Length: 223
Image (cartoon, rainbow, N blue to C red):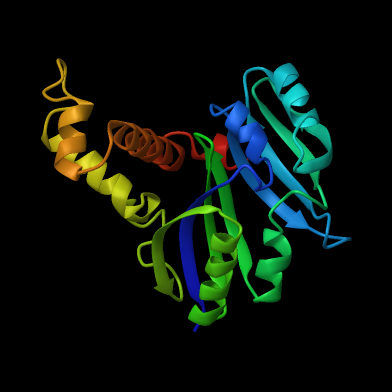
């Protein structure tokens, strides 16, 4: 039975890593990836950005891509076709193809890639994980499951969130963070979860963004 994996990955050597670092407010959604030359695969993605001129300048200086083209879109959401560099970049595409992996979804927010992949078995996932570690990619596993995810988005909404996002939102809600006036602050939530305030802020923002995409503006974010 296949293995599904959801994880976060961060590295300046991942494709678009320098761009995400320079413009952390970007929201990137992968449409698909393909390769005529496996050393220089193409990436098609939608990027939400309120300053496309600056984005193009940053992309031009991004050493992980050789060329890019803005295909369509606007005023704040654009479709780009990128060609990955053949050097100085983590060769994740070749590695997951080698182990029989399949990229199901990819999204970048706050400078971090959130990835969902399918592997033929646990050994294939472990091989890919070890490869990312060898490339100094910061890796945070969100969940693993045999076969289809339980409670996929659209059933009861639970699978829209990772476990860490759900826990942060639960604690924030129960402690009055969303009340007016607020009954607690980020520092108290951070203490309750034993993580940093920055980590709490990121989990709350990403969790809220996922809920909004799933339940408030599904047509626009999935177009």
